[in-house]
Image (cartoon, rainbow, N blue to C red; front, side):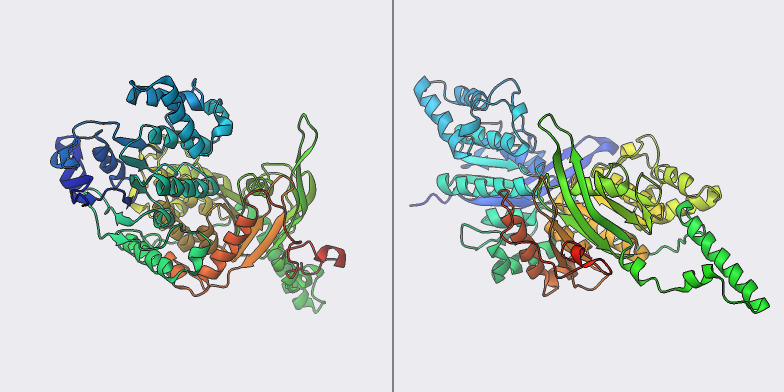
Amino acid sequence: MTDPTPIIELKHVSKSYGSGDGVTHVLADVNLSIRDGEFVAILGFSGSGKTTLISTIAGLVVPDSGEALMKGEPIRAPGPERGIVFQSYSLMPWLTVHGNIMLAVETVFPHETAAEREARVAKYIDMVGLAHARDRRPAELSGGMRQRVGIARALAMSPEVLLLDEPLSALDALTRAKLGDEIERIWSQDKKTVVLVTNDVDEALLLADRIIPLTVGPGATLAKEFVVDLPRPRDRTASSHDPAFKRLRAEITQCLMDMGIAEGGDADDGRTLPNVIPVHFREDVAKVKAAAREARAAMKNGSPLPKAWAEAARPKTGIVERFVEFDEVKKIYPTPKGPLTVVDGFDLNMRRGEFVSLIGHSGCGKSTVLTMVAGLTDVSLGGIVLDGREVDQAGPDRAVVFQAPSLFPWLSARENVLLGCDEVYPTATKAEKAEIADYYLARVGLADSLDKPASDMSNGMRQRVGIARAFALSPKLLLLDEPFGMLDSLTRWQLQEVLMEVWTRTRVTAICVTHDVDEAILLADRVVMMTNGPNAKIGKIVEIDMPRPRTRRALLEHPRYWEYREEIHAFLAEYEHGAAPKKPPATADAGAGRPARAVAAKHS
């Protein structure tokens, strides 16, 4: 008869840190019951108390009130029956893969023979697929491999409960997906009880029997649970065709949105932009004004319209369709073994006001393309033209938002944005520049934090400042290099919608490098997919025919969303192991006005 006693139980658990006016209430009245062999995912926002919750189960944190139980007995301290894997790798850098795992095994099983311990270590090294790296040290391993060592070490201690505290969040999307599949496979073999803390809805759905969201803090508690009654193993690509998966994903996403994910920036608070012209538009404006003056003079004396006016009045279709031109762009780096071609013939036309997402596996040259158009990296062969001028250096007409927000920590949000404004609006008054900074900071939800130092901000708030600063430059081209890559999934959702709200107001031409398929679809007019490097180029382009303005809620409800998602995932899966394309890239979208020999290669 099955023991009805839960293997893990939390009863009315509450936890706070600090005291007096500085107290922070993290968890409030948390109740949880987990059966033996069950896989439970706790899903929540950054700062909601997920790590405190799992640390309570591990015995690393003692609750202020309530109790944590294992098999009906109070949890008072850590123990080998509960193995834990943290987000950071926590490996001994001087020990090999084998040595790191053996260290834990010798501690937990001191009475086993050397041969028994050796067999135990070998079993789990093999289970996580690291037999080939047995004698490597952590510095010689990738992030994904280091995390596999952490999982193998926890499993080798033969715990009854495996606790995973965001073990995949520091990894890139592809490695994260692969390691998630490994965790599911290992769990299926051993059927240990697993508690996974994550901020990724797809990850939770692919792994868990139950998903329980944690409400927004302070004083977070567990919300309505979702039973994941989907057959195993669960395939990422096949899930696009599973109505039950899609329904459950939509319900969980809606639940999280209802708990506090904003759908954009602050409501319009009446702030307006002053009528000032950025330095990089001044020459364009001057040309138009000069042409208008010549036209007025010609009309007075009955002369034909001057050539400058005729050119200004001529339809600009070609220029609009080729506002940004990448013409057979290559990037070649010298190496001891000879030249290495990272990007090999990147060929693309962009319309004025178009938003393009650039996606592909790590190392395919996405960021290299972005830094070349930013003027931060030289073009080896070919050329890039922005608004009729070849790009040969960095300039204020291009604004870049990087993955890590590069702010001066001692300056306030407003002061960080004003640094760019001083350069771009040299003749504007101090008050006008402050209005520009405050306008965009309000749009990204920081109207109440204008004077807050960057050092006192969360990563999400700092990235908001970076986005506001980029828009405040009034660039001709906005370049986003994994702008939300360092943030948790739920904060990414929030800032993606903030970005969309601000972009809708400006319609600036934009390129966003991303690993996130949903992000690529949400933001873009076209998703440009790159083949694997070296010698990377455009492999496929998907037109996203969805109305704007877009929100994540609208994305999930759109009938073509899953079709786009599957098409992009299928391309990425084809190149997952470095596979060459099975056939040449499609050439239906040829470049307007280009010679016939180039039509097959140019993407417009």
